[in-house]
Image (cartoon, rainbow, N blue to C red):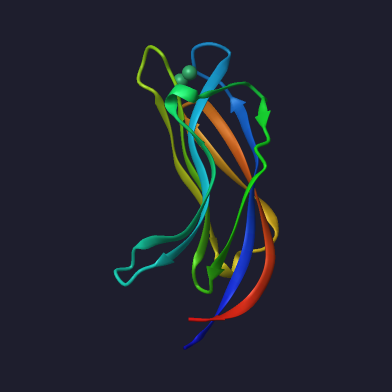
Length: 151
Ligand SMILES: [Ca+2]
Ligand SMILES: [Ca+2]
């Protein structure tokens, strides 16, 4: 048994904002995809591997949400989990923009990667963008407590 320090965090999906409709046809973006928070560690091969995962938002392409420029959603969904010392907290996901005539736009798989030592109570912005179409997402992180766990 060894003791490892862990941080218990609560992540809130505070806001999804349509910042720029840009080159899209019409006055709105049609957004779908998924947003989540996860604990990530580096495995024996030096690759990132997901540990705890908390889903915060998930919409299929036949259920896209229409957003005009400056429109905001406030999902306020939350997930609570622990992150081990030396691991990372990632917040982000992957968003797409639905188009009827052309192939849908991939707005990217984006994550803010927060080092264990930098996990603190704060808001973290993540930007999704395809050409001039921009969606800004805000994740709220709360550090609930830090403690030792025997593993
Ligand atoms: Ca588009
Ligand atoms: Ca569109």
